[in-house]
Image 1 (cartoon, rainbow, N blue to C red):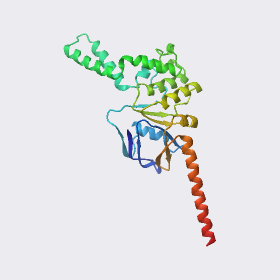
Image 2 (tube, rainbow, N blue to C red):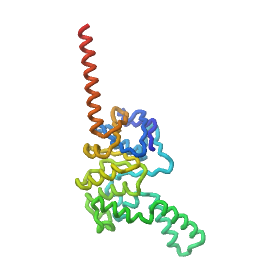
Image 3 (tube, one colour):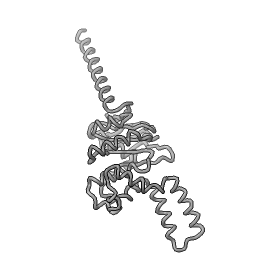
Image 4 (cartoon, one colour):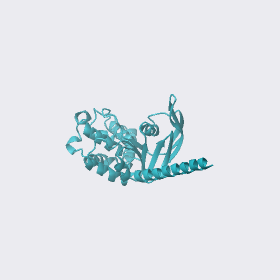
Amino acid sequence: MISARNITLAYGKRVLFDEVNINFIKGNCYGVIGANGAGKSTFLKILSGEIEPNKGNVEISPGERMAVLKQNQFEFDDCTVLNTVLMGHKRLWDVMHERDAIYAKADFTEEDGMKAGELEGEFGEMGGYEAESNAGSLLSSLGVKEEMHQVLMKNIPSTFKVRVLLAQALFGNPDILLLDEPTNGLDIETIGWLENFLADYENIVLVVSHDRHFLDTICTHVADVDRSKIKTFTGNYTFWYESSQLISRQINDKNKKNEEKRKAV
């Protein structure tokens, strides 16, 4: 689970969030919606730790791994496509390099051997021996062909960089997945693949998207950012929209009746 506790954020007199308390539960996909400028992307950055709120904190269940769709297409320019995806699982990437550094030592000691054995065990538990194969399959599913996998990121078109960064976020089955506009730059076929992937995803997903059809397909819940608060509703975007329209009509009808009663007095 990931929780926001008393999150407050203001820029000058403009209050984006005021005492926001909300929980996100495993097995649910939350479509984060709201008017432009309401703070949808900012809220994801607060959850990821990229932005520090004025007040409050984010709590994550111990041992859970978070992955975020990176927006900077130039961040991994000097890395190969495949390595960029592998970097999405930071602990796996770190263990792999620490292990390789030990094996590369000229004066390999018994202590080194014990440490390498520990790292091998952790590497295996994280699926390290299948990591490159799984990363390659993920890239291929997103339309990044095998001949691109060893090419540097700076040498591939920006439309493919978007797909590689998406593969990086999805790689390794993260416990919490934060996606800001994940369908940007994707063709219909790839969007369809992503819809199926997220619809079957068993962990926590938060998605900001202007694609209503996409939200309808993947979301189990809607998180509505409105007037410095966030409320969650069960159901997809269409269910939320129709329910909110109904509530709005009911409120208007009630206000009209009250006004008519006042006039009649």
